[in-house]
Length: 263
Image 1: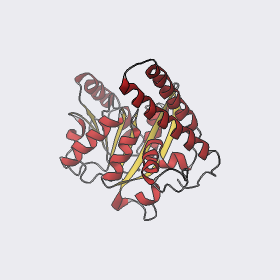
Image 2 (image 1 turned 135 degrees about the vertical axis):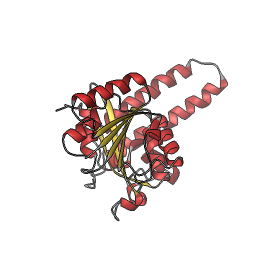
Image 3 (image 1 turned 45 degrees about the vertical axis):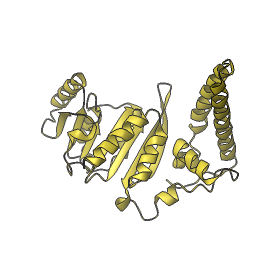
Image 4 (image 1 turned 60 degrees about the vertical axis):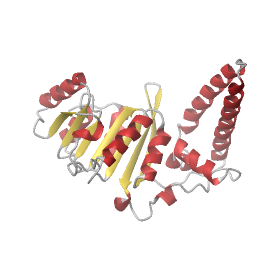
């Protein structure tokens, strides 16, 4: 039996039992092999663009004796799928910009037809993924923030709007009522996309650490800009200052808000 890393296990645990799964950018096919090996999924597809990882995926599948249940396919993003052959798509370990691009390209090509569930783990740019889900008919069902090997990762699970429970709508998920009152509606929505509505509402244990790290990065960049004599550096510096103040404001607000019990 394959043993997954904490990050991949978190993703596997969020996949709905009985779903036909497709893992995009599957590398060594660890996740799809695990899902079928454990009986959680009846079948799976491991999609990979590069020959090296594709061959590694095929070896992994063969060694597990799952050649009939797990297919390794070469292709770019969701191009490895035929419409209607997957219920759940997982994508992990890449930037949010690329992930959103893969989802949008697949949507336009009809590859998301029949896909009711997305389980996504962007390394950076999580707000781009949340915004894509919000704008294209998927509703976040939950978010998880975990630490592995000194790095922090976010896992997002979303369902198609038609499959989402009636009390879990985008209006409900992105309700900004608990954010600082002096923020305008647009800024509140922006920070919900950036920090995660569930993570914020539940005051996820690792959330302050994640955003203290981000605050520290911005502080270092701002210090470098202060050394520049270019006029445009002043504008960038002011923008960073505003962003840092918003992070401080949201985190300060969270310390006074009781965590929500919603999942």
